[in-house]
Length: 448
Image (tube, rainbow, N blue to C red; front, side, top):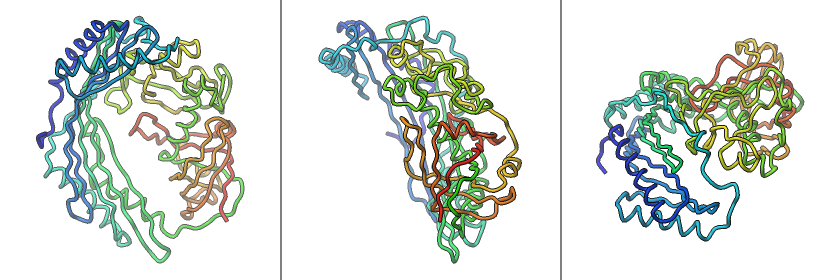
């Protein structure tokens, strides 16, 4: 391994040939069908803390995974060795697994007519000419801006800068072969502040495929500082039922819990609080969850899913009504439905509804809780029961008055989404789920 970020664009043709060779070897060894994913990745990450360099990490990874089918029997194996002998041995290992597994009538590749044929240029590759010294300077600038923003910030958990490139190719014996190159870059900073009431920590980060679209290192440090200092001197609140506004950093997980109930696996296992909900109204009629997978230069964009199925724009929930589950080829067969192009997850999920500016959401609350951080795993995907530790800010007369922590918020997801009053104009675009602030009409807030 060399201490350089390798430009992965030159690997795509080689990976496509490798995938083609592996598929041919799978056929030679008797597989009725096969699929292969191959990847090459390269990256740099630099971490600093308290004004000093802590770590420099280079990564260069490559490997391929193969799944073979003997009828409805399935076996998988993987390796990082692309030599001819390694390919033969890996295919043989997958074949041996398949021969000893039980038949599953839902196993198999997606139908050929569902595969992506035209692969649009989604503008995902924007390399960053960043060396370790440059990355260290940016990380130090980020942390320094945060530490100097307020005298109450006396400690730091560090700042980091990272840049990453990847080339991925997928192919199968139904005639699909596709690949893409992509980049991911970012800054992050985590700080600790203290006063007479004790210590608090918070963080901020920026992430993009294009380094030119990142917030500046100084802006990330200053935002981390602002968020950290704002949490000092938290107070308790009385237990009761109040409106709750989930900030985007917390709203993404809430939307993820709703979306998880629509995944094919949860549906066919009958482990979903939205079981058999196609065509039913399950949320406030203003709410829409819409997937737009072909947005240029976005973190969640993709032309095909993990089965090679073409991705397409669609709504999972439209004005409160479930229009589609989230389906791979396997889960679709289990449910007797068609794949939705979501093997591996969702791509650029937009949350739409009655959009209001955040100050207007606070005024609509009147008195209640803004949640900025959630703790614990208290979400029951079967019943929808929801109970999480939380921290954030208390609102009186439509204005934030003080920070709070050490509280619990509780409800049931079915009720919470039916009582989703408004959504904010502040979607978080840094990941696959682009959630804005979400105002829930009432939840139980357990404090003193």
